[in-house]
Image 1 (spheres, rainbow, N blue to C red):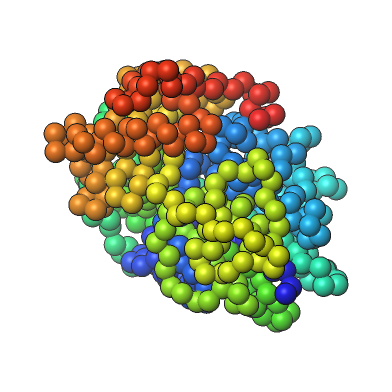
Image 2 (cartoon, helix red, strand yellow; image 1 turned 90 degrees about the vertical axis):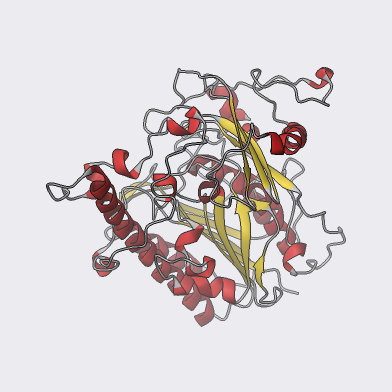
Length: 497
């Protein structure tokens, strides 16, 4: 049986609830939806660190942030680490990455393990973007989403022979400052539905959550909005006006992505390769679309950590609707390698969920599927950064509950602020409170749940070789001899990790 080609289309900050397949009430995405309709839609795929660079590093390496060294936006990747791409290449795949890299540039940080790489510098530009390749820097005229797709398809069309290939097509959109192209500039001019939690007052939440500078009402800039608001609006009216402006441009950027996803699918079909291609659409994390009154991500709240993930492979993966098991971005590397029949590097963490999707074993594979995940570990490291002021925290989420510990300390990592604050806890019952409005960490009725989850968090953290902050008390029922010391990495240590 032929090994599959692999195409991973990854966007930046595309929330699952702005995709038709996930029930969006604010936009339509027919070409993205097609991938899930012909394959599987994963309903609970989560980022383990909801930030662009760290998530991309985890997707590539199949490791958590503290292992791959990309904990914040200011800790570049050691590109020589084993990745699922380098494993595929060793197994005879031709490999390419085009678009947003955003994990550093220059010696040691430029993409490695690729036959062809052509990437934006840092965030890149929406119009006439600058690319960096092995030949140096150049400017490509046009709109970034179109240009990235053009370059990617050009590489695919250049391939000869029957050897399988892997393409990472990584978009900038719909990242801030949300600059749409002219083709989609008139979309979404009608009022866009406002989330029920838009006026969230954080009444039961911690001061850690309240400090974040991500309010639509207060923290969107003139660059974001692009036009001055009408005069004479009240504070509440102005907040709604800003929400509409923000969402119009965000969704217009998504519309361009959707068109270009269709271009990729159409080209694969024209080449006769769609049935033999493992095609994925995802985003490096979720995004707040006015939920809780916020934009951006970072927090362990559902809208931030939930990644869209649509997967098709017509030759082997039956169309089966949604899949509700818990998976993470760290799992993607092992899963892709499993589907391709290629061994994962021993350093890779996570688990393959390929068998969960019904794809069967790859030729020559004898390993049994791993047990479904009971929950997952999350950690956000970029404490109190200069722009968003989000707190450092970690937590554990299982099928129903989510426990979060805000340890509020940057640990001296690049990109973090110097201020520290007392530790705080949040606990949510996502079955009874799916919008995560009611923190029950100190509610007597949830004391037993919290005690259990504190132990679960402790063990989940240890299982991935991470360690708690010194300020966290040892949970009851855990021997004090099991106290672990939290790692603190310098720039050089982070790059080598």
